[in-house]
Image (cartoon, rainbow, N blue to C red; front, side, top):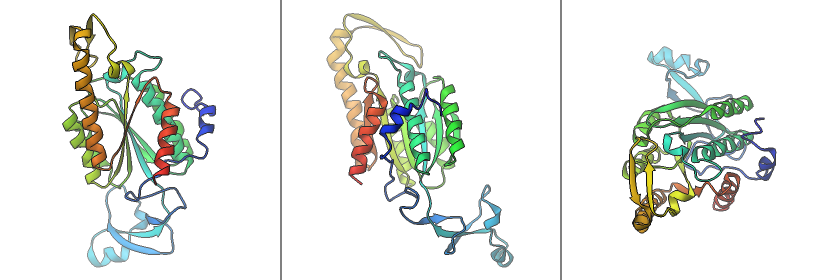
Length: 295
């Protein structure tokens, strides 16, 4: 186990906590309910049309003989939740005024979430992005898959500008089955376009969780005097009197947060933000306790 990303002391706190899905997605924790699966159950459910990549051993050749079209047999069987963690690795995520950057925080969260999913025998995949997709790792529940995900997370580096809308347009068609989608980002992009993009996942009947990760200085803006600010994504610089604009900055920033929060909650999307001065494990532990109580 990668002790840098997964501290055994931290893992021990999560022994009795799970990331449960709501009833809308195809899956839950293994053994808790029944769903649809291309499998080996004795109870046949229905046929569905074959698509490239499906396992050919479930093709119903009798139906093919009658119709000249390929269909798969599906069965009722216990299935596991499929989850995709979508991690923002754009340059804005490297900002830090504390001991950990937003990206490092997101990496630790992604590692811990991956561990929890595989430990409860559910499948997890990983997508990293800036203005385009950098990694797209399909979901799996194998123990060996966790080591692969941790290796990828170890090598992640911030790069590029953010374009959440464009990235979602690329990845949405690739996630065909209803899944649990977890976004980890500062969401520093056009908020209306971001919200519309993420809502597309809801329209496709995925369950969505949005973790917004922010640096304390971005929230409080506790600067004073003449300061020069450097845009990490487009390289632009600007000098301002931080003291004189603090109130207006805080108003605009709070409006930004409120818009995302209200839009997501209205659409039954879990939204919660954390500052990087809150330990990532404390943040996730508290979130899961609240989430599990409301199920």
